[in-house]
Image 1 (cartoon, rainbow, N blue to C red):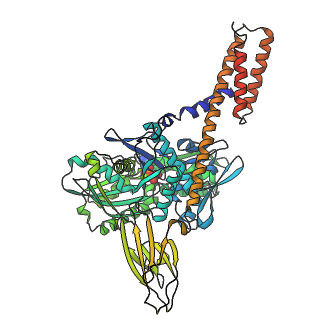
Image 2 (cartoon, rainbow, N blue to C red):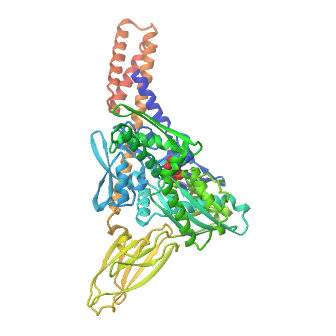
Length: 634
Ligand code: ADP
Ligand code: MG
């Protein structure tokens, strides 16, 4: 039985992978669009003059953004998600909520409390994820884990197009800051992808909508993209016109608001109920909390079409079966503050775009959480009962738009794609700290990107020869209330009375939303540059290179695993044939004994369940094969 079971698992493992990708290396592989979501990711490609959303090896059009480590392998997507209850400490999800953030941030600290895996403070306050494999503790950066998901999406696309894919457009929440964008880009590099462009998720969704509706479009149309997913909320206001110009007017949002938060509120409520009923606290009981969360998420989905949903868990804690019923009203009450926050963001976005509700012609819903009836209702009421646009698929629109952009950037000549123009904006103000902790804004939020601006600063003390330039992103007037992107020192300023020496700061935000700041002492021409490597909380070039190599190492291990799996399957076949031979009654007694012995021995060896060397499996396979053919036909 053991061998059969093993055979089943191994066959499954092999059959879900495809080798087509290896057959046709290089040479005109299309660029793909990847929506790297907090909970689900999606990949698409422009093919035969239309967008194809690519199904994964399970046939699903979206792939869970999950990674898990078992003692024998590394799992990504459904495989990882399905084994969480067995292996919660080594099953990673929601990593997008941590990427590009500092460990000590309050939001990170709050999230960590709810995660079943361990996150520690790494160098430069970077969060590091700890996993245990074969009793070995390993540390991963959030970029590495995200790269595993991106690599999976790359493979899904490769299996589909039959070529090695290199180029991609990757989407990020509009409200991601520079650090989160840079980290996402690094993750893509580690995954072996060349990032053609990073675009904002709601902009990508608008592209999907625009391309789909281009033919029927006359004049300009103001659209709101309301994107409420698992981890993030983004709202964008764009104008789209008939010639394919997409112009983002304003963005707003929250990189920490989404379906996950709604689930957590439900979990908190269950924990309270459990406490009331059984006087036991589930806080810190990771397994129980993990199971609760999964059930709450399911109940939440049910509440989108039913008015009641139950959460039932056998033996949740200390032998207690837990069950409770959520009404839709209760769910809404628990999460009302989040829903209200979304509407507030929408209001502020409209104000930033210099528009009123009446100017909005279309409201596009994106992200799984926009299926929540209350969210739709509030939005509809906000727009005076206006019908919301549900023509585009909320789970796929972002990848769709990313793939359109990928086609454009790789020079596709389809008229619609070639003529499309997209103008995006920066979500956050960029500022430099000046004396007295003041945030001096150099590029205001909602400025069109790419943008380059120079700003002159003067020394604040007599004979000042050194100054520190600290660069922040955010909307608060006190610089330290904003997010420190990095700092650098400008030295060698010629001594002079205060206010005389001029330092010219040049701030640039590129098409990807990534910034560079340089400072020049005007009188000497000496220049300092804030590059990605010289501030804390980022991976250095060496780190990224090393991680790329590690990822390659994983690939080799993976291939070895595949080879081994095939060998095991082969051995299984040999056992099957030997067994048949033994039953066939045409084997002389002496040989029969040998065969029976070999069969028993191999079955016992297999049931040990240990991982053998490939040579050993092959040796046994050969031996059984020879035996099963005995006596040789003359
Ligand atoms: P992300 O892009 O952040 O990964 P998605 O757009 O894929 O997120 O949305 C995933 C979120 O949507 C999850 O929190 C999921 O629970 C939620 N969701 C999916 N379907 C429904 C539904 N029918 N009702 C409520 N929430 C849903
Ligand atoms: Mg999304």
